[in-house]
Length: 283
Image 1 (cartoon, one colour):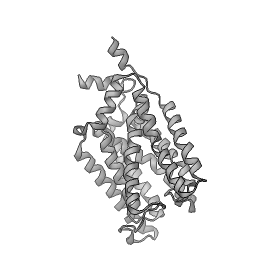
Image 2 (cartoon, helix red, strand yellow; image 1 turned 120 degrees about the horizontal axis):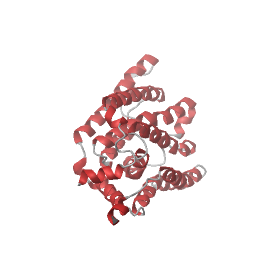
Image 3 (cartoon, rainbow, N blue to C red; image 1 turned 120 degrees about the vertical axis):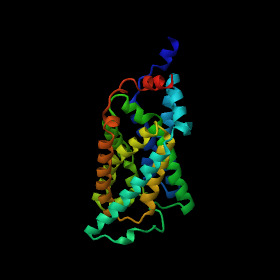
Image 4 (cartoon, rainbow, N blue to C red; image 1 turned 90 degrees about the horizontal axis):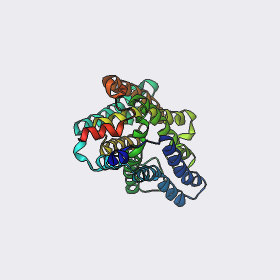
């Protein structure tokens, strides 16, 4: 009975997002007005906020099942379905290729099939830029997959979870469009590019959820995919116009994934008993 009481836990998605936004934006908003060096430090601190909030939610939960689940997601490398991770990476590479080819219809160039010389964000060297992309991919996924996605999925099927998470994840980046030197700030030359950035996070949310679920909710699998997406978005010489086309292709790919995995996205067997279902699997 005592064990069951310790494992009984009610996820708190609204509280999580409120705190994750708060402790990110209180650093990112001042970075808008800070000097470049100070701004970089403020952005770094804000970046880790969701991971810190997520980890504290788990550690302070008094739920043995929730703590055990986070541990399994972080270090359970055996859970990763490497073939599925490779398929996801290959699929995104295909999305980039299709987007570039389709962009030719709108007057874009084949020269996009090349590497960019620099990264889109300024203030750091190439080595530091690569490290930034790596750390962003790792830290973000600890926050989003450590607690966030499950906290939404506890109350609905994974289709609506993906929709809500994708929208909230995109909106989380909002202050970055006002911080000089960021990738998002570079989109401000055209409102369409800004809108496209925020819209693109929604279909991408479906793909990331798929990567998460097919690897038995492995955070490592999501880190690898997130890193690849960030690298491709930075180093493939796609124009902003082509990235708008890319969003359409990502949406089509997400729709195909949902249709091919209808039971995964629309089943409700886990709703209200996500941790209990995980405990059942272990026993």
